[in-house]
Amino acid sequence: MKNVNLIGTILLSGALLAGMTGCHHRPPQVTEIPNVGPQPQPPGGNNNLTPGNPGQNPNQPQVTQEPIPLTNGPFTRLFEDPNHVENREKFKDDTIHFDFDSSVIKPSEEAKLQAVANYFKDNSNYEALIVEGNCDERGTEKYNLSLGERRALASREYLANLGVNPERIKTVTFGKDHPVDPGHDESAWKQNRRDEFILVTPK
Image 1 (cartoon, helix red, strand yellow):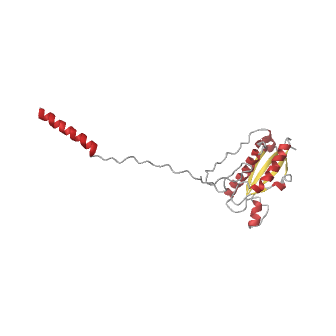
Image 2 (image 1 turned 90 degrees about the vertical axis):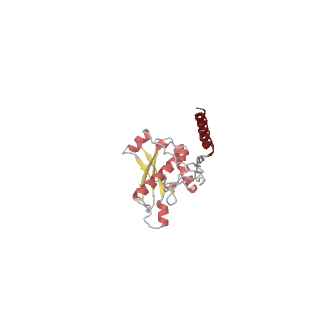
Image 3 (image 1 turned 180 degrees about the vertical axis):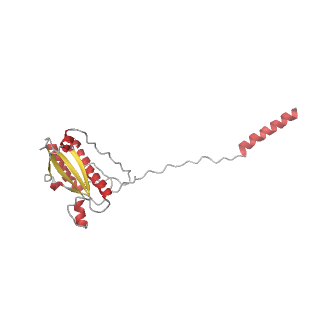
């Protein structure tokens, strides 16, 4: 009986010793979290809609703002009224232009948007605005409709940041279908990449 106990003790000691010295487990691998760099942007560039700050640090992740919704208020009914009057001459000189494949408001165009905003802040009449986004002829129809929409929304957001009630602003995109210059070179294309502003009043 003593021999059996002795043998058991020896075997148990050997097993414990093997567990302590004979098994070498690989330590757990730590996966490092990569640094987050600039996020990929859709064609057309990133809209920076803060007045007076047209650029962003390219090393920082870009943030896309959600469009300001158009509620079903009195100005919505004005837009839907088939008898409303559209004045295309009022802000004709305030048409803004964009770089190729971009919907970023350029510093050179900010004064025009400020002039449009000042009109609406100084006039509380029952008037509203249509922003028409346009592109040059390059690119597919679908892509240019999307780019025209982003351009119109960029102006709407910019004007809203300047204090214009966004409910007074409706956006429309024509893509490449409404060129002001029918040419096929850069001098024509730069004129066609634009937002136009149309004053809307009741009849």
